[in-house]
View (cartoon, rainbow, N blue to C red):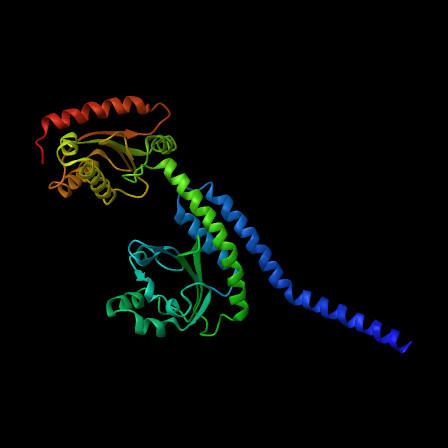
Length: 353
């Protein structure tokens, strides 16, 4: 009878322990469910976005909902060619300013200790940067408020088992704000994130290759027309056709490698003079289309002259331009004929720079 009572008591205690542990783990189960939902949403949203930076920002937004101790966040991507880590998305910081800051991989905290393989906590990041950054970069970080951080939870990202970037969740509250339980959560997030980002990276590359010219990184015509047809009614724009001068001569004399180099230099230069919302596409071999939004003809003309001056020692070109206001009756094919005619007139009448 006593043995039976002891056995029953043991079973009751065991049940109580199991219930207690489940209750204790409930918040972790809830967070795990949030993470799984977040990963699912992330994979779904990549299919509807052509901008990888939007995905990075989405990731940070969702992570701050899960890791509630964080008040700011940043997503940095590793550029293997330059061996630098660059900011691609931030929450709580001025992106225009912070995007000009980059770090050598060796400047990152825990690079030597853990080889950036697992999540880690940085208590008082300023102590690390005091000894690992040069004077100018250190002052830049101070002016941006990046050294006001008291504690950081860092999650290294790996794609195909290679270091690809790092996510920082920052706190201004306390030097000991993040704990071992946060680190466990970060490890689980990383295990899920690496798989999803690998898929996202592949999908983005496929999506990008379908929409952009491989050599010049400009839109292809199919994508240009898709974007063109979605521009708001009554938007004032200037459509520009550019044709490079003597491009066949360059290819025949110096080879296609030099010709390709000219195309890349031209495209990179144009991008420095247009806005993010403007459209820029490769129309043909050495012909390009530019759509400047919310500008008039004179403003567009000034912009083209600035591009010409920047390229005067490299390549000259003819231009056909037409100011347009978007409406339902606008015919892109008629516009192409018009600017094509103007472009040849420009090539014939203007001296070569």
